[in-house]
Structure formats: structure tokens, C-alpha cells
Image (cartoon, rainbow, N blue to C red):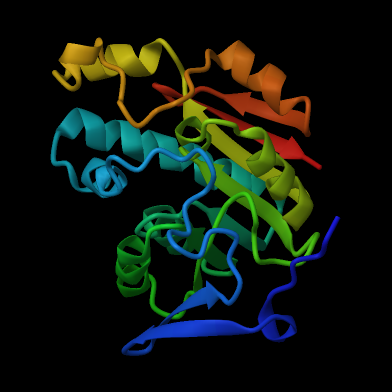
Length: 236
């Protein structure tokens, strides 16, 4: 497989805002949009709204979700991480808050989100790119995070193959645990017209189906269920 190298090994353009940097691949697979093949784009700000929502129940669920992210990263022992689909950098900010020794980079397809991520995480380098064509060397990170991303893809297999290529050891992957995720939406009055289904979610996995799919690409070491999600720590 072609080795798509980062750093000085590949030309990049750099968007600067103050002291912050967003690295842009010089030859992205989809230069017109940087959007992964099959990704739904109706709500690029949906991730932001999820994190700034003041609903106490939702804030508790998000807190519990990130508690498990932190715990599984600790279990992996990885210190060099990549967050694929990092959005506005909320997960990176929480990881660094409790693990300041971590070296983390982030990648997303949505430039405005990355600009906000640089404000939240000064000193962190973010990349604008495509999950199906990651601009990094093979085995370049000890752990790769892919949280709440795969459900947005019409075909998750190319993304899983790329995640496996760029990690040297671990992947941490999460998706909504259906039908509990849709049920939680209904209980809080969200997407009632669609029985709680988020319109941008192209995939709907039960926990068992998700784990079976992941096992086709990785060795699954631990599965946890922070309601209403399912999260798997996998080894290459």
C-alpha cells in the first residue's frame, strides 16, 4: 500500500490564525471538499451543538463518555495519538486536561471546526483531510481515535483500513449503540419525526453487529457501553 507520509516528507499548505496552525494536505483525495467518500454533510455543526448543549442529562452522558475515552487511552499506554474526526477538538482538550504528557494531533474534513479546535487547543497541530486517505505515514501513531465518525459513512471499510494503516498498536472506536441512541433522542424530544434517528447517520449498528464488524479489521481487547454509545479498544 502506498505510504502517505506526513511532516517534511510531503508538501503542505498551512492556514495560520495567530499562533495556531491547521495543516492542509497538498494533494488531498477530494480537493474540492475534503469530505470522505459517502460522508453525509447535512449538519457539520451537530458535533459542536452536542458539546455546548446545557441540558444536564446530555452533559452527564458526554462526561461519562469521555471518562471512558480517558480510561481506555490510559489502558493502552499510548502517548502519541491521532484523533480522526476531531471536530472542534473537544475530546483532545479533555484528554490533555487529565493526561498532559500526551502528544496528540487531530484531523477533520470541516475547516471551520478545525479553526475552533486551534482556539481550544493552542499548540496542537490539526490537519484538514479525508479519513479514507489519511496524510500520515504507516504506523505513525501508537493509538488512533475515531469517535462518532463511522456512522456518518456510507461505507466504513475504507476508513477502517486507513485507521489500521496509520496506527502501530491501538485504535479506539465508538459509534451510537442502537436502538438505545435513537431511544435517547426520542426521550429528549430530538428527531421525533424520524423516531429519534439522526438524519446524518447512515449506519445503525447494535453493539453486537458493531463488534463483529470491527473484528474483521482488528483484535478487540475491550468493549464498554457508555450509554447510548458502544466503544471498543482494538489492537492492530
